[in-house]
Picture 1 (cartoon, rainbow, N blue to C red):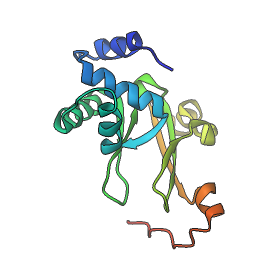
Picture 2: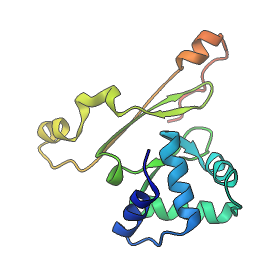
Picture 3: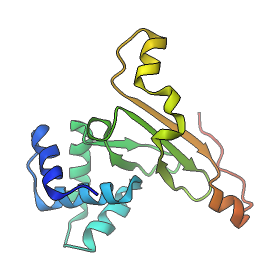
Length: 154
């Protein structure tokens, strides 16, 4: 797990002041190791300290703007956030369960599509890759939650 000093370094590199709430938001995203909703982040931060929801949302917006976090839109219109490619890896892959809505970071799932391979194939310097794989997670399949998956929106 990343330490507070590492979070301070990340924020300093991109010119963001390391406030207690910003450090707490980074800690939550690092601990989760998956893309989580803003409300999940607010709840987790509030378990350890008082936190205004608007302040957490502003921190997330700033983190996305500076490349510290990635924001992912899903069909349910709730954004999910995870540590950004600039401070995690240049390759980012997620699997999203269309039944329970859980989004996991699993970059190794499609490692053959990393920046080096794509750069060679496309004849360009690839600085980042994001991939989302939609499906039904093993837990939902085993639980027999026979509901039909949400239709893909185009």
